Image (tube, rainbow, N blue to C red; front, side, top):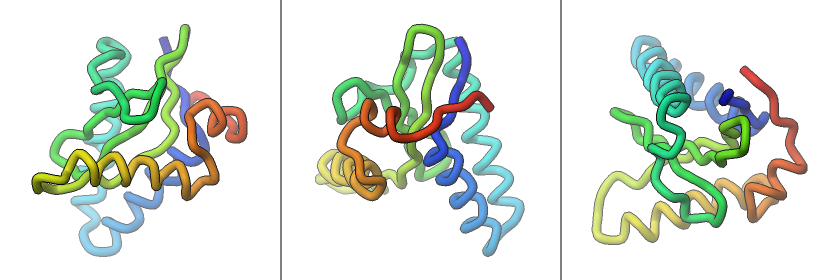
Length: 125
């Protein structure tokens, strides 16, 4: 099993880092390390992410951050497509999260992982 990244996921991760780095460089490094740690954990426990709100996907909640990574399990790899900001709290957090993840796809002109995967280069990192 290996990890592969869609360009969107790489761009999202870079944007997260840059955004946080502008205010607090140490925090940016911490968040990026949390993302890397959570992603590496999937190599041992690929189904540890919760079932995704979009069919065929899973969602990895990045501990100690407000981010969720959307991914798909494939025969020989774990493919990451996007990082989204998770809702912070409240009774409508599930609906808000669903809207947020759908919005992540819509912003990229896609409604499914399959169409996103076909239109976006996936590469090992």
